[in-house]
Length: 249
Image (cartoon, rainbow, N blue to C red; front, top):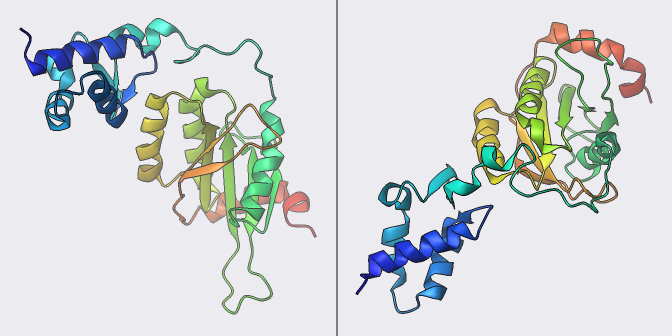
């Protein structure tokens, strides 16, 4: 007869083979316990937590807390990611999200007193132009007046080029007090799990959104940005190019 540990391992592999996107640890344990209710949860925990070392040919961990069967590694699925695109999915331009995010920075997050869509090559610089840029200025009602702050954002509606997007968000810190990277909620768990700690390390704000609905993107902040002091030479160089748009009125 099979031991409890052998039953758990067998059931775990079976579940992973039927889960292309993988299983988070808590869901993994719950599913196994549902299939094997006679085995205590603690026994399941004790077997699953290092399953990739017990059966390395059957389990791998692409990100913290996520287990997946090797047959579903991204390179075998293709560049489109873990989930194949839906054929009926409405294609929305990335630019359609610039104005909604600018409004979200002002009205919901209250990070800016004014924010505008930008994009393109407005700064005429190989280091890139933010998709959205905003300013935070003290209000007349503020007792303690703070200096003007610049906030920039890089938005990606396509989750295939997040590494480049993160690099751009980092480069915006040269002339911004705060910088954001805004990525689709349906990005792979591995990508989000990497962006999360990287954003903390580099002080970048991480925001997730619904890239299928420009009318209601449901922006959700995952990591708040750290304020830092940019290089004022580049601040003034860049702001001069958009002075009329961002600082008028």
